[in-house]
Length: 119
Image 1 (cartoon, one colour):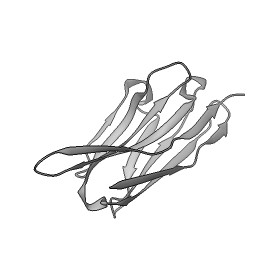
Image 2: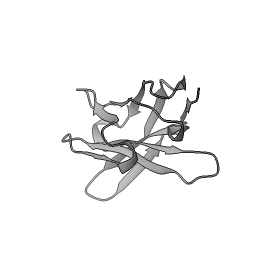
Image 3: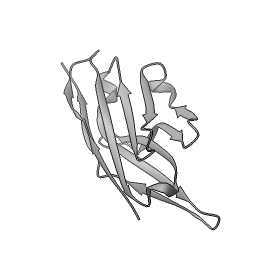
């Protein structure tokens, strides 16, 4: 129903920046919320940031004032600007999307993109 493809990951030094992008296809007009989650080796997946179709955002405390989530004007793209990166930000980052109807909601996930922060 919805397909998500992430890009923009890579290796950066502490203090550096990266911008992640996610492109959605399929039933894009039903997308209510998009967001980013991350999972480090041996750790559970955790929320990084979300944004609704109305522009409301939510951030994990660990990334507040460093990361910014935004959506394209077509609402089929989402970005994560990551500044002042720290080694603890190292993880696989997953794009997510939630669609909704009057009957139910559905969640979708991208394949993930690796972000490594190391000197």
